[in-house]
Amino acid sequence: MPADAAVIEVSDADFASKVLERSKEVPVVVDFWAPWCGPCRMLGPIIERVAAQFDGRVVLAKLNTDENPRTAMQYNIRGIPAVKAFRDGRVVAEFVGALPEPQVRAFFERVVGAPANPALAAAQAALRAGDLATAEAKFREVLAAEPSNRDAIVGLGDTLARLGRTEEAEQLLARLPADRQAKVIRHRIFLEGFAKRHAHEDLAGEAARNPRDPRARYRYGVWLAAQGEYERALDELLESVRLDRNFADGAARKAMLAVFDILGLDSPVTKEYQRKLAQALF
Image (cartoon, rainbow, N blue to C red; front, side, top):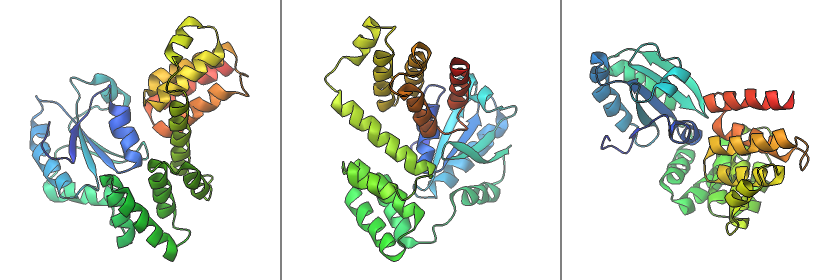
């Protein structure tokens, strides 16, 4: 594992959480590489050095394509090194080959951008660092000057949700009914609330004992989603849909759509289960 906190290693198993999910908070640049690849060894130190210079405003994820062929195949990696930048769960920029350091830095600058508002940048940095009190104060400072600032509304909503002030967070995020990131935060609030309410129930056992019960499969699926086990959650929710698509006014289908929002519509997992859901419904 590289020593710098801005650089992580990822695999097929955790790509969704460490890259797609994380990219909803901060841009994630993925370096697809392999140990035998000479150009990869040339690019590696350069891209790691550049990532470290952005002071937490970007995450560099390294994926060994030999050990993780599924993700490499899903993202159509034909030559390495291949570098893809993710925001909100989707690819927003990419390049192939070992570029010189100035071009790599320019790539990162395009992906990360420069915050126009110093208070907003400070608020976002505090939120990333887990300093929720400072984040709240700074986001409120931005909103006092710019009441409709989308990034500040989303950031403060996220901060309030993490502080457990969920009603206040939902009221604030209601200002952005069509915003995907705001919807994701609202989904998380629901999932965390569900997990807390049912923390002492054996939902896994209930589903195992009643495999033909759409309610049991739905409840276990939502609990799995609250734990971040999205593929297992989607399997349970899909089975609930197959058993009774109309259960609780389509609750399982709606829960699947919420997971799709969380993962991002460009996620390979989302695309796979969208196809499966369509087959179950039609």
